[in-house]
Amino acid sequence: MFKEYDPLKNKLFNVMDKDGHIVNDKWMPQISDDQTLKAYQQMMFARKADLMTVSYQRQGRIYTYPPNYGQEAIAGGLAQELRENDWVVPAYRELGLWLAKGATLKEVFLYFMGYEDGSRFENATHLLPVSVPIASQLLHATGIGYEVKYHKKDEVVYTFVGDGGTSEGDFHEALNYAAVWKVPVVFVIQNNQYAISFNVKNQTSSQNLAVKSVAYGLKSIQVDGNDFFAMTRVAQEAAKTARENQEPVLIEALTYRKGAHTTSDDPSKYRSKEEEQEWEEKDPMKRLKGYLTGKQLWNDQQEEELDQQYKKEVERQFEEAENYGDYPLEDVFKYQYSEMPDILKKQMYAHQKFLKWKEGQ
Ligand SMILES: Cc1ncc(C[n+]2csc(CCOP(=O)(O)OP(=O)(O)O)c2C)c(N)n1
Image (cartoon, rainbow, N blue to C red; front, top):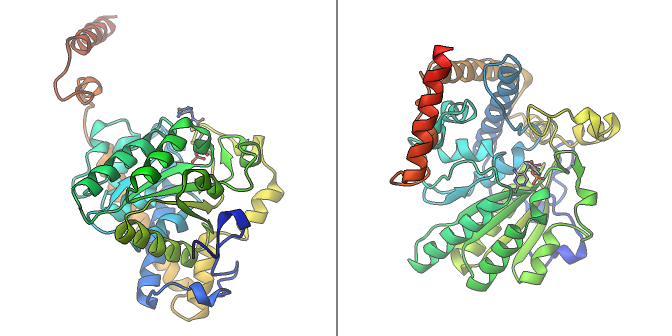
């Protein structure tokens, strides 16, 4: 696969067209109808949760949120390969992966409500917290990959970055180190076309983002990230390369952020309705639904019923998060070191004093 879709050939890997027809049978992944349907339902849940979270933020009930709307097939496909002991080292736009790893929506809500407990996943193993400094997480992933290899563990590390993040030095350092030391890390670029308002066309002079792997000497592919089957197949090939050959892989998944960058952004200021419409036709949910309905595995009525169930479930978890209780002041300072250094203690006491003074005003 990596030879046939060598990024130097600038050839996009896809399996399914925009209506859900299989157009590249040779590379259709091994996946049962049941598993495909289950994946679709999980993607539906992620989308429902995502849209409702934006709405909660608009109601002033959550501070901020980076929407995943339109990017669901990337997590959907990768989740098919993800094992319990594999690692997910995310940026901040990987809702589907957090859920696939076993984080609860309530934990995700807590994070975006500002609670430190939103980074403490009760049931998710090997899931790192959100990383906001762009591309910094790639170095952490590479370090984890080195440890995994050193101790001969049967684990793969999946890490994520946006198109804008490929211009950070950390991206290049991580790829170089990973390729030199041959660590089992799968780097995923979620190329959603924009770094806030900055279009990917202005981000690089390279013919695509996957090709950046060539200089460092690791395998890579550019894949249609809105095609669930293409993502699933790429995930299978990448996991095999990482797990069995102990080699890193770079995946550039082409997608489109249908929502805003975060809830503080207004995309109508920098992109056209025509462009949004063009991508609407390639929507990942619509395409997979087309496939499932074409095979009579799913219909609108089932979708409506499940949508209602999911709505209730999202509401339930949101209410739990909303009633979580007071935010402990020391949490801001507590988690930076295993033992709090004096300089932080001083800051904490100063802040406590300030809050007391403010109360008295
Ligand atoms: C090191 C660093 N510089 C700048 C920022 C501010 N910032 C937050 S998101 C963002 C754009 C990131 O775009 P991209 O990597 O394409 O990811 P996306 O948000 O589209 O998923 C920037 C510049 C940051 N968080 N970290």
